[in-house]
Image (cartoon, rainbow, N blue to C red; front, side, top):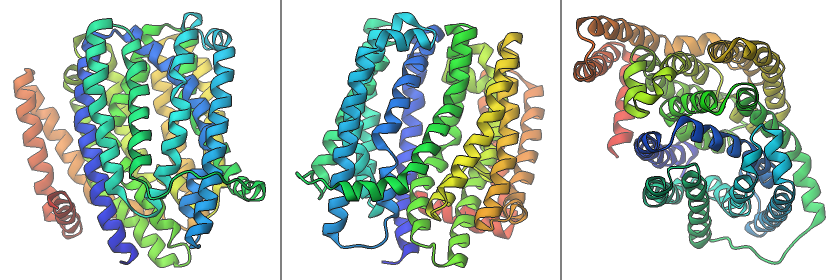
Length: 480
């Protein structure tokens, strides 16, 4: 089976996984947002910030090493996998013990001294993810996204049967903490049980040295990515309040859940495919542009739709107590959509080419702007913070476009030409949506107008021959 067929089959399962996840996750969050206050979500954000930082070290970049590793004998690959697994597990246990010992100091350092025990308990996920991380690398290397679909399905069902009932009983952030641990435990059991590879008593320090030489830049890039993702959480939590922290984190998270469906579906497939096409520049670029066209076809109108219907989006997914989040949700939606099309796949491109330094440079250039901007604007209040965070997205997009061209020869002009019909159709759809809202502001009519806008966009796209082909291909994938 060739690469193109592998990518098509993997994409179908990966898209199905993301669609199912993104249909169910908002349902769970809709329930939780009505049972747990924004302050409680702010506490969860603080806990997650600490545990996600530690989780970076438990992977140490080995997952991408195993995916990108050139063709080798099965025994050689198994030996590398064993070294990666035992290293990850050992690091995760050490990190969990350190978090447990210094839990109160960590909690005080992030501005929530009462969360020490919660952070220590939430960190139990670290050794569990060390099991699933390496297994996931093997599945992705083999384009076995069918198994990953079933693992994700378990991760969707567990919150329904664990997190939601606990939220009804506890009405606190503990429901989310216990739910996350349950999801990681279920994934570790399922992925290990179905895997052909099982951990064996083997270790080799020379192999570890070779793996670290590749993975070090990936690890640094992941640390930078964590900082960019969480620096806003730290600043808002430290200088504002748990209420505004809940608004900040949840607004971004809920919007990303909708916009990142295709990104999360295509990203692992794209990385696996590009890693195998590095010797053929033409096929490498064709694969990248193909993914961008499909992503832009869906993401661009989604971003504009979130902006136009930001109040409805916030009301339905979060409830009336989150009304203040609507402005940030709308602005973040439209800018994030542009960022996805013009640069968010850059990490997959850089690492697949064996140029992780560009990934580090991208993250570093974002961080050196983001941190001082947030520190300056936080003194003016929550509105200034989220406006500043949105403005930095524009800077990040410019950096990613420049480095994609330098490192991989990816043309910004071609990317824009390939997605221009989507921009035209989405803007026309956006104007139609705003016009329909002037007729009636009721919730029922807004639902009707959303449906009208969707039909209108697909009709416009069918006029263009290039987007007509993309539309038909996406429909075939969904049908299959």
